[in-house]
Image 1 (spheres, helix red, strand yellow):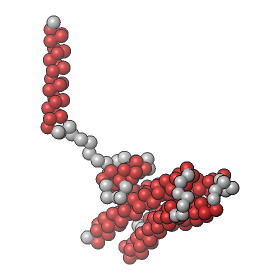
Image 2 (tube, one colour; image 1 turned 60 degrees about the horizontal axis):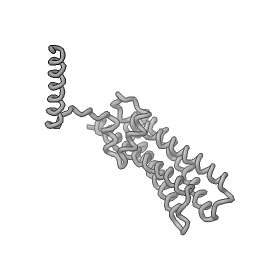
Image 3 (cartoon, one colour; image 1 turned 180 degrees about the vertical axis):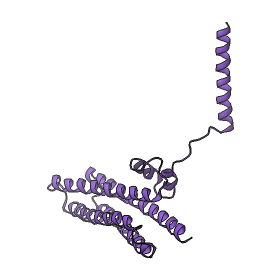
Image 4 (cartoon, one colour; image 1 turned 30 degrees about the horizontal axis):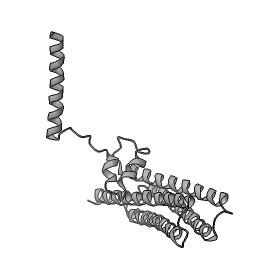
Length: 206
């Protein structure tokens, strides 16, 4: 009986504690990671956290590392999209309508340009700390211009795919989804870079 009474008492106490925690709303929520905090400042916070969590050290507090990872994510997504579109053009060349083929071919050109811009951005970010403060604004402007171009390229591709009467089809839908993903991760990378640049200049000129 004594053992049963003690067990019941422990069960009762655990229920009371659980109810009390729920009623007060204080369950001690997990503190957001640095990546999550930074991603809140982007246009697409959920994919931002999802992708960057695979590239950034969980304990990192370095905004430049976050930006570098974001650029890497954008570059990887762009390369994957390029590969997909190339395969589409190769495998469905004879099945596609001429207008659809032209739109997807133009998308491939835009993605190629985006890959070039993203590659330049990665290199430029690495040079930010090498040339001193006088060159920082120049490097910053370059990265902002290149990332903005990638976003514009993606929108140009999407507009081309959405034009005309033939808007359906699995191939076009998948292509649009992949290009939209490139736009989203690059838009996030640009937002994270702008935040990093602002903090960098404040800490070095403040």
